[in-house]
Length: 279
Image 1 (tube, rainbow, N blue to C red):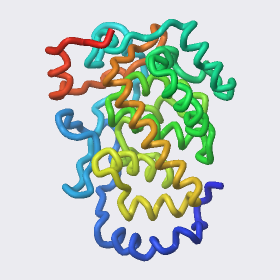
Image 2: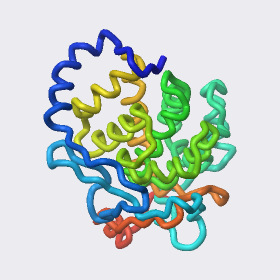
Image 3: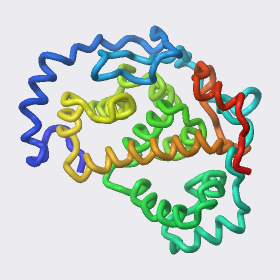
Image 4: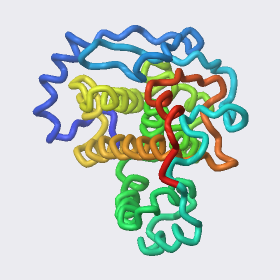
């Protein structure tokens, strides 16, 4: 159960060291209005524990609602899939092997049709995915973490899928916008801010810092801490698959928020000049 004050006793051994670091090392600027932030689109998507804090603030106008980016230029490095999706009959047949424990309407058909190229992987991934979508982290907090992972990894397909679930969990258009701004956006709860920081730190350093861990410990028990880290790790893995395989957005899917722009990176440039392959 998420709480605002009690700490799981199994976390206590980390608490003293974490609070010391929190007192002496975590010097963060006060929040500013959303429209006063700027973004370094060429830099990493999150702050680094080892290199000091870097804040990737969005230049989006918070007064605008989130719009689809699915018409015109796409921000994916691939205009066509690198791995050809299997037929719907094929992936649905593989899906039935899981025993119907996971509702297929909760995940985009394009990713199912891609991963089903490897039937053994598909079935085992489905079984694990059941826990990733139904665990001890409440839906709102879970979707905030997943959306931040998608944003950090430039995984537009993942973002588009989970915007639907985020709205069902109660996130507003302003909440979605603030996910792109990061932990420094005003209005987050302590837990929400810590989850966003954790996603950023795992992206850049593959570990959660002591101050962020201490904050998570003040809201989550051990089971929830493990679920939170596994969620962010799992959806980072999925982002890598989606981006590398060139999984395409479904026609009715919402893409990035209006105004979001990312600079092309070296990987995207090399993809553009290389054969798509594997079809």
